Image 1 (cartoon, rainbow, N blue to C red):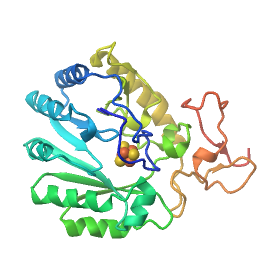
Image 2: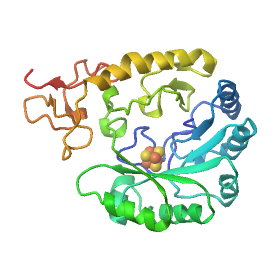
Image 3: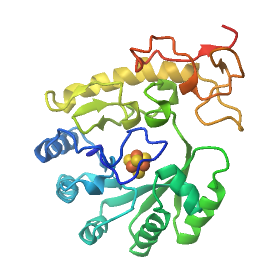
Length: 294
Ligand code: SF4
């Protein structure tokens, strides 16, 4: 549940295009609570609150307790820049866990990625979560170049974090500059997962936000799940099947089997490749770079 598009940061890799000027959208508290009720009836075991920065939404505390009351576990995916004291007591409840992203142990490099000098603040909150015994999952996102990924991992280990995951930047949202490419997704979309965006749009994943199944404000979640699965199997899976793995030294998001307009090596970000669709329709799932030699 992407409950807001607002965030203190403005990360260069943000698939949601979130930032200080984002809004909480059109979903009211009652809409989110009803969504939790519907998800619980469908057998959902966990709801993740994400954004934007979910701790900026005034209804987050109520939504956490609402989910727990329905027997649904909670993950709060936060940038951990600022966490008000009352939230820590909620985070410490049984059934609640935290997740965050991390990039580097270098404050200046962190600032270049997130737009603000917030590394020490996030680092301190991670340490506080560990000290309080709050389960925390940290994803290190590799944007390429000289990013201090290994040092970030060592830093997290020194803080006592035991669940550390690695991923590359997905060229979707802000880094894709408006283009949408289903082959950038991980492939788990729609597989027991559905995302609800701040305006009620339901998609197979928050990253697949242009592949819409419908809107929760007008249609019950149970009626949208079939469309979520159809999108996953007929749009996302075929797009991923076409993609060949990048070489280890490729720029994140590139595909060596493709080539940029005007020639050049195929190892370039897909967002810069020539789409097969006119620019006026930049989010068509058929978007892809030209195969080499064509
Ligand atoms: S902290 Fe997360 S939501 Fe906020 S701008 Fe960065 S990636 Fe986007």
